[in-house]
Image (cartoon, one colour):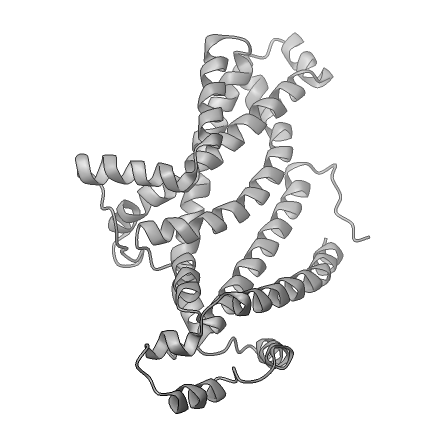
Length: 316
């Protein structure tokens, strides 16, 4: 297991390097000058060039990239052009909000996806199966940000049950934190739950056709015991793969959802960074997203062997 984890981390190094290089080139390709955005249109030319030299933006791109990468390897992600704060400090301040949002979205997605999938698989071909199929198709087809806006209109503006914007830290008020995160988390969780629903149903139907399930039923086990003791665990293996991939989608969706609900997370940080051409912030935040995604997928691979001991993780 340790050898496998070390191997995967070594393989991830070129991926992180490629993403950093692509992001570095892409943000500089976007039209606009970060110094002019920071100072405004009424600044004189000498000041602009002086500040550009201060941040090293007057050098060729390859030189800037090598210098930035060298600092990253030393643990320094640079300094924000707009706020003058260290990028690493900004990421650490915003990271808990994004982790809370994606974790709550993932939990809600599992709750919304797995029970209806079990219901549909155990009632295959019946009305329940058809209803679950329609709901899952709708959930996959509708964009999460649009669902989030509808939820905001319904629960915040019309019913006034939940706040539409803002954030309360978890350590200050757990109930307030949940009230502020529930709507944005639902906006991310509904499409995820629909995806899990479809894959879980298909996986369960495949498991139901296995010999050991027929043997369990022949021994007189009830449908509930057969599903919970024998089918669910094996059916979860392909679903975990989907969840690992969908976590990347959650992180991407958080960029828009955090902006809609004014949540001070990593998504809003990178959005503000792109809007103001704050190159160090965008580069550092995208790098953080990449590392998080790689670590989550590594965790998913390790979970395979925990859920099904027949699976052995080996480094190749």
